[in-house]
Amino acid sequence: MTFDFSLIFSSIPKLLSGLGLTLELLILSSFIGLVLAVFTLLMRISGRWFLMAPAVAYIYIFRGTPILVQIFVIYYGLPQFEFIRTGVLWPILREPFWCCVIALSLNAGAYVSEILRGGVLGVDKGVLEAASALGISKSQRFIYITSPIAIRLSLPAYCNDTISMTKATALASTVTLLEMTGVARTIVAQTFSPYEIFISVAIIYMVMAWMLQKGFGLLEIRMSRYLKATAG
Amino acid sequence: MSKQEPDMNTNKSEQEPIVILEHVCKNFGGFKALTDVNLTVHEGKKIVVCGPSGSGKSTMIRCINRLEEHDSGRIVVAGKELTHELKDIDAVRCEVGMVFQSFNLFPHLKVLDNLTLALKLVRKMPKLEARETAMRYLERVHIPDQVDKYPSQLSGGQQQRVAIARALCMNPKIMLFDEPTSALDPEMISEVLDVMVGLAQDGMTMICVTHEMGFARSIADYIVFMDQGEIVEINPPMEFFENPKSERTKLFLKQILTH
Image (cartoon, rainbow over all chains, first blue to last red; front, side):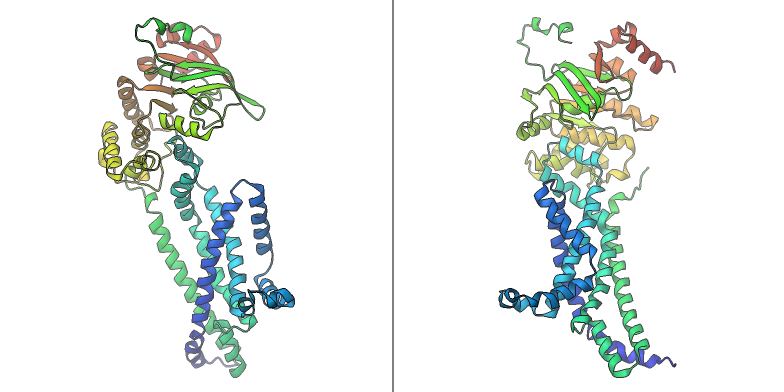
């Protein structure tokens, strides 16, 4: 077979027309996922079983099943129920875009809450004891001591998860959405050159991953500046 | 100790002891960390607690500000009994400063913010006043020039002095020291001990777990010797070093003073 480089250059602008939708999916799901993650984390570390149990179940379900299956369950499965189709949420649940956002957010929420929990567990117990000894209350300790330290500890794993999310948005193409991968599939259907087109789309994802990695790297340096010893 | 300390004959009506431990017991699982510990500390006294490792020294002083909960017995600090009442615990913690072996400074905050955090959150002190208070105590521990550094940029001795200043900022009535020099390089021990001696001379009530016997000899009013979760002996330093009563004390002194 021949490899047509010109096809790569001509297809990239077309593929970029799907970039907007990819970014929308990514940003919305990451944001909603992060909010979910914080609530799940608080439930998970609350020490009360009636809060911990639902959090653990939620994490278990969404970490234990493929995102693609979750998208299918939400998009194809839920409308089977009469009360969903007549319910107030139907305008949202019938849109493939929102179904994807829901699935991706729930997924991110489960993973990120565990990432944050790792950060919280990584905070030195002695430092928290020192805060208690000063009379600083439990909630104040969480806000002023645990959170800032835990966020820094979580950052590398969170970056990793965000890159995974970026790639997971490609699954939206399976439920008719024309985000980047969806656009690629349409072009392939017209040109019959899957090799060039999918390589092009892969390159765009790689550039996005590189930018995320770079951005998080800078954030990490900034948040770790207190660890840099300059005097012995 | 009360029997050795006839302070009732001072003409000023002597106030209640500032720390009272009565029949305090504490277990970790099956391990008896503290067994029937009785200790009375009056205001202004300096107590040095020593003993072999695992003897319950740290556990005892950690019970005084309830970093550990005692299982039975009574602990009264500055007139408040420590129970499950959170309000009383917070009130006691405001009166009791603590210095840890591993400094435990807030790593993400600059020295100034390490000192002012509790002033702002607990004492509700305005920013400027908190800063002034912090600077006053940093001068007292001789490191006002490190105010804008992060803990990781300081030496161990400097970090421990910041930790002492941080505790002093809250204007505590009692200071607890849990092996404050054990994690330090030898050349930094004296700078921390100097600060502690200064505090003692200013009349602070202090309870120090330490292996620095020279320090104990020079500033302690009483030395408390613990072994296997019990207080074995309480004596003034002269008596403690020259004329130890129990065999366990003699053995301990022999072990630490041979070198």
